[in-house]
Length: 373
Image (cartoon, rainbow, N blue to C red; front, side):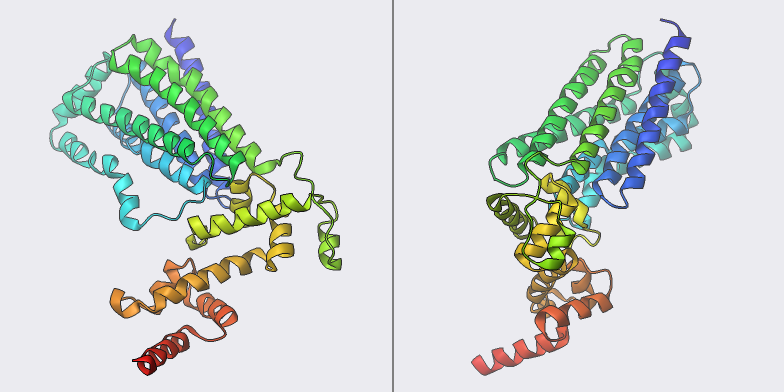
């Protein structure tokens, strides 16, 4: 197979994936997991472009660094994508940084290639021959074990939690995505480790990788855009709500089941701690439409979605406010820790759901403790 055929196949795949990544980042304004899905796809496109560049005899050390450094965090993108999709509690700043440790540890190699240009020359020359320096071998194997290990860990986690009764439709979709990705990874990495023919390695991802990522995008998109056939909603008694949700029909037991799932998600996963948590995120986690979720929250819980989120945030804030001195924190830090974007919105929500300001709440509890003592 000639260079021209390899170039055409790879170029088409790279363009398709780059465009898909851009679409993902655009959609991330409404559903945040698309942000990390975009990075998964973008890292794959970078790897393909770097491989093609080297295969054609060009290659540049700085583009090599960019592609390798980006792909070293593939496991991090995957963890954050799945975590966002299933509405897991937000990770601490330290844990987020720890996820990107492989890319951070790549920085010394970049510095070394800059200080010792011969290492950069050797790295590219060997890459053109399908070989690697000891450092390139180490970092490429890190990509293999980190990405495959992460995939296996997440897949096992999805199977273990398969019968928890929450988001079964979305959970089934994640298991499917991770299982297919694991097969894709093993078929790419095993030949790589065994030093298979260079053309196999160069063409495998543009062909099968492109198909997988496009399939992944379509599956995730369909989950957020469609709902099952039994998700037609029941007319409600309230006049204004009945008009708003007139086209929604659903058995009462189904509505109650969705209500219970919403409460369990809020209680167990605390997604309201994410500042940008949206109705579409909750709908996607449940595998139904936003309109359906909105109807259940309005009719069964008696809140709009923003009010429901703020109610949970205020309840969470109450516990943090009582530990302010112990944790050496401030009211502003408590507000941010609870998912509020600023002090003003925190005070407004707290007054609404606690009938007093945060400072009054702290003062009342201190007085109560003194009287008990």
